[in-house]
Image (cartoon, rainbow over all chains, first blue to last red; front, side, top):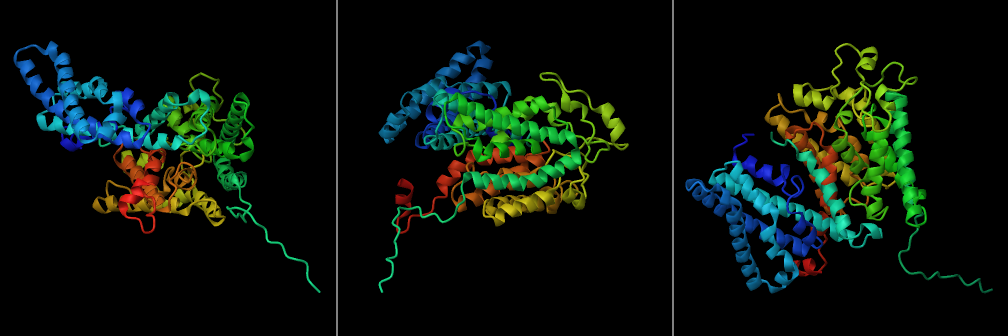
Length: 193
Length: 352
């Protein structure tokens, strides 16, 4: 497959270099919100929205930064953009689904500091993607995050009834599950290449 | 003369008439695995035997140790640790160093099963967790293949088998030079297909006179052993059938598109570990979906992923990863494939 094609970039971000399971970014919300499917799925959607907005803005801002030769401001600009995108999503969710807003709790504003999103914005800049490529990349990265979250939530819901030893409960077993999922995702290495 | 009053036995459900229990089913799975093990020992000699013994002992020992440490009653009597050990050994290359196999067996059973609460709670097949761990940790030994039916296989070990713990395995080149025929490349049928587009004869694949992991070479034997379990109703035939069918159909489609590049569908389902995976691995009762409708989806997912990883991935074998991903998705599949409650509308069903 052509490495510059949009389909390949999407696939790359979605499965092969899955932000959570291959690059280990954004593990905090991944472990925090994946206990239940009914929070994991909306959280995934929220991250996809923020990623799309952040990716577009980051693309625009990067052009300005390069034009004025002030690339060292990149990190702080991106964080500001992500924070405002999160505010947008937060206000929308609060308005339309207060219940969901309460369920997501601190993890919703915490998307701001989700390194998966910052990572996505920085990767697309370093890889010098065009605007359409950036869109494909952010969509793939967001969908990959959602996939990891939803798979994890399904498994953890099943574990609620399991007889897990005391030493391995909650976050410990979640990290182990994440590791096993990550090993399973190694099968996608080199796909399409 | 009034007859003896007959008794009516009053009991609560379940009214079980069958004597099948976990230990009995697991024991039967072990019986079904024994011919495969025996054949693999016949093909690969003492190295395969040592591999089987070490993996089984480590698995059972791990479970025993864990039960002792956590103060629980020992659960080794249910035979499931034996199955994990045998299955793991069957998926490893025959020349795999024994200490690495022991590490993989320990990891698979401890992390894949015991940390989740033991039998009935594992989310993925423990044997495959062990194998995936070995694949990630010991990549080179995991892809070093040795020929089947080597002369002298019953009297001497393959040099790499007896590597001391934490040492790199001894090179097998010198040994290969003695036992292998000229022009031996060390490529499995799948690797030959992927990198050189050379297909292997179906008869060879059926009888297993080819290279590969210790137990995955004879597709026919594995299938027959699976039939035994199916007839004893100890295995859900839908899993095996749907995996093989979906793999056959998808690879058939690619074969029709371009027969020069893609393998023919028969090759796909006979070569490599697909048969072993479809019969013994994916049928793990705990890690597969609960509904029959879900099982069709699960099987199709595994078959499709296997073909995609084999044809388009960087690896030439994808059965293990496909099954692990299928296991990971199975709670979700169970959830979406719940039968509709009779009389309920769609919304009520999902809400309950």
